[in-house]
Image (tube, rainbow, N blue to C red; front, side, top):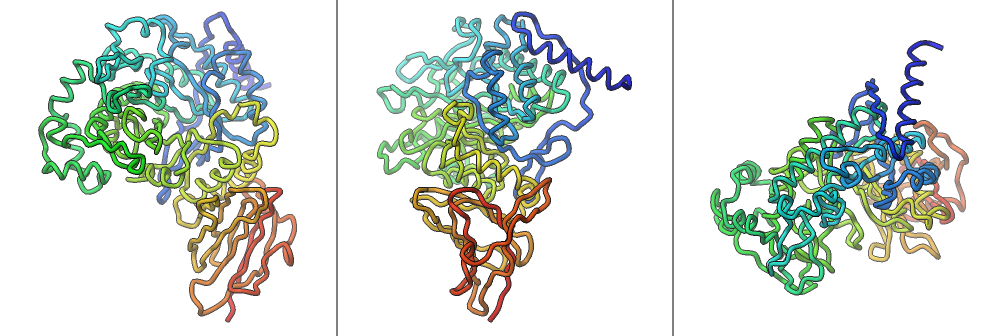
Length: 567
């Protein structure tokens, strides 16, 4: 055995041994990486995650919040995840577990998580449960929880303190940034093969108090420090950004700024106006308490941006922040977390937190396509780190990768024993893994479309090249399904999905369209491998205005079709 190989094996053994310790401090192992740090790059309209020099599509799932909170609990989960056709997992790291005493760090659980994912052949996105998780400050260490003076909390309009760290607490920001920087420094030291490819900083942040009697009581922080800041001048850094990006701002932000004369100085209400409030559910898309939301967005973004910047100084992995959505049932700030990274405040986040690469939605609402399109405004890439699974998730996964060139799709609770067997997502993910190289090749080029059929949208109709494509559900038991169509040549398409009729129609009446060849097959290492020729009852004959494919209901089918035109 060569000396270099022996050294590598010894180092690997030390790393695995360090991760298996439950009582002792982990052994520090420095292994230099031979590859490039993961990063984001643009291709057309898409932003792609590059891992070890190659584009990577996160066909993923998010673990439950406390799954990675114990060694023995986590070990059997990795095997289950490897069997679900995922190529990555989103897992958590909590501040309270890595810094139980101020200044003393314990990364044993982090090491165990990285090693478990590596051995299962999975990449990792890690969520930093630092100052906030679902708005609340519940994952902070005890030494932070118990010191209200040094680490102040949000106060609502009625004077009630909330269990939420105030963004105006500079000692809180410093402590969080210090812990996150230590985490990133440690990951750089131990993650020799880039198992960790991206970071989420904090989780669904913002001021929230669901039981509040006054609908606006938690629309912002009303502590004395926050009141002084709200009644003080809008920071010059934000004004400079608004002036520079005036023509491209989110429409509501530009609207309120314009209504107040595009002022370049003044208090928050002088620059953006006094907020309005509409409680009617029919007006759920109205931006109630908008000035207060802008104010909180600035303060959260400044705080989280400082944490992100401290981490990137140690190890510059891509960083995103996720958002609890505005929706019909929680339609004003305080009902959903006020100040979180939502589309209506994305400009504020960009101005205050340049170290954050993009914002990401956690989607549990029926307005799925509307949410995706809102989050893609101003060139923000679509990355879905948390959403529903089941039949809806299986359909939506196809749709977002095909229609929006999404970088990630990850249903929450992927480790739930409920999904060990008969998970509809398993079939979809199996097909996506085979199609991954082709999807990545066509991201952002306008040659790929997604299909999503549900009760609201029973038919999808769109153009691709010289054709109009029409997709319909063909099922007696499914209410929703999805698919992807990729145009690989002037008259050639690859289509995948389940329970779909897909028709290719002429754009005009100058000619008709017919099937030439239809093959069902698969992709192996990115190369098309036909398995059988389809014709007759397995296709839609060209007896009407177009030619069509049948994607069966009982499984996911990948079909390659070539067309021809005639008069």
